[in-house]
Amino acid sequence: MTREKSLIIAARVLSLIFTPFYLPLLCIAVLFMFSYMNALPAWYKWRVLFTVYLFTILMPTLLIRAYRKIQGWTRFELGQKKRRAVPYFISILCYFICIEVMSAQNIYFFIHCTIFSALLIQIACIIINMVWKVSTHMAAIGGLSGGILAFTHLFIYNPIWWFCVILLLSGLLGSARMILRQHTLAQVVAGFAIGFACAAFGILRSHFVDVVITIFKIIANTIIKFAL
Image (cartoon, rainbow, N blue to C red):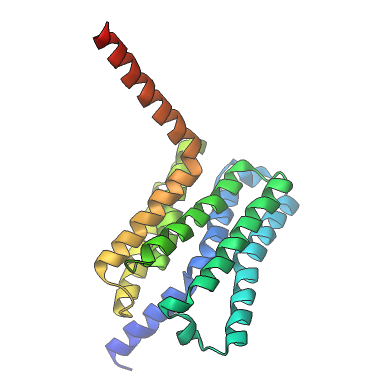
């Protein structure tokens, strides 16, 4: 086997392992293992993980596959730009249902925020992909990076080792996407940045609102002082 073929196989395996579908589940699993939430009962953690798996992985996969079978398309044909609308809609709908189910079950707010952030990333990628192609793989792992840093601010723990691992995996995944000629460097970097920003905002959005209100108060007080 030549070196080029080995690189392509490794890139395909890496892209398959870090498919965007699985990263919200991974993020919540990490949260359960390395935050104060590891003290929660095992049955509760398994219930949450099953709920997330059901609505963010299993249901979208089965529904999109059923839609493809009904249309008689191959995976490649479904991936064409003009045929992605329905799969995108199915995925977003499943995420909305997941959020509503979690709200009904009074699931912890931070877990709810994780799914909300993943939904924001999907919507942002869909909108941007209408005019320019970005890497959804990189958006997902960028979201994982943003989520880790955001939860660091909330839970006050040292994320340096986890963040280093995620950055290393991000570099490998981005290289894999370029080796497979699915994306350019700009599309890879843009995808990571979009995911990072959406995850940070989705988890810390209440803090962002407080910051914006504080800034407006400072500006208003400054204007009043100058006016007087």
